Image (cartoon, rainbow, N blue to C red; front, side, top):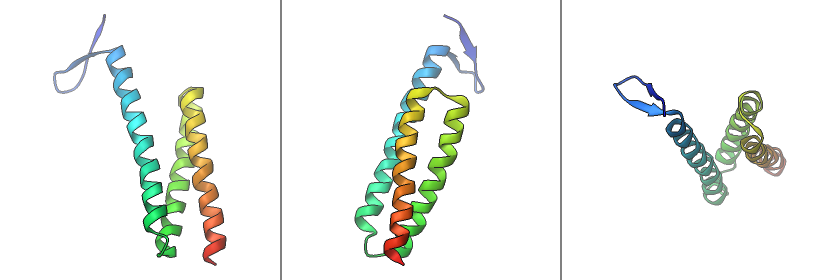
Amino acid sequence: SYQFPLPGGMRRSLMELFDGFSLSFALFLATIAGLGFLIARGGADDPVLMTAVTRALATFSLVLMVISIWYWFLIPTIFIGVMAFGFVLAAVVGRKSVI
């Protein structure tokens, strides 16, 4: 298979690049979900923190959704959409319960 020369003297095949992207993407989404669950569990006593984090994660998720629609394919877009929906819903419902 063809090896792409990369900065730093490394050479990787297209399949290695795809594998790295897939693993990174899965880890990234799991980390964001974990962060959301940790804040939801530990931040219940701090409504200002909860509101700020849910708004930041909702905004980030929506931006990632636009990037996914534009550049990627259906499967990651579906998972990002579910994540974005959850964070937007938490931001809207959380704001109403804090006020």
